[in-house]
Length: 212
Image (cartoon, rainbow, N blue to C red; front, side, top):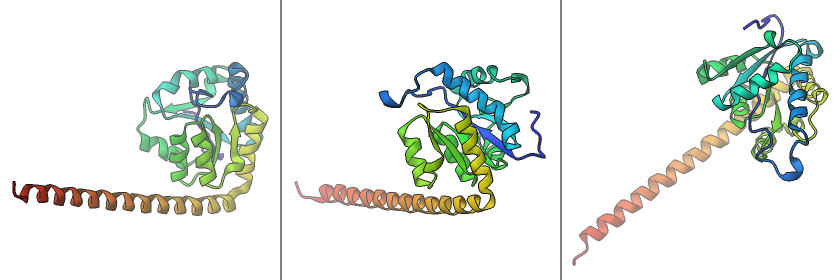
């Protein structure tokens, strides 16, 4: 895919929904301008951040939108693009795991990158993205679509890269804490389900044994 493995890698995910799940005052004023801002950021990241860039699609329906963004880049033919159209989720995660920073719109793409301990910059296409970034302690790197510019996106990625090992270490610790909370929540859910099944069975047996 033409990725220079000698440079830091920045993985980017975009979402065809754009601002569909945002409130009226949060929507982008010009969808085409927003698309151009994404393309300009893809153009600027290699030179301003000294990194290679790969566009990663995690939802089949996003593929046409990804192509539209790439078509607006200065050198679209040189843009590395991979997606779940051709690759399995675990293969996409492996690529994410090699990244020094991840830019994500779709929540599940951010979750996958987080699971690989890769610091994220999020584009808040829905409230749940803000909530997840707050959970990770990365509110600072959650960008609103309404005011998005190429400079703001490149600047946020540059800040993440500058944070280096210290940021990754702090982020990884928080991810581990969130995983533990999720595990505890799952244990409680299973425990409640088993208790409910047991009580239901006892009630059923009691009703069966009751004299008519």
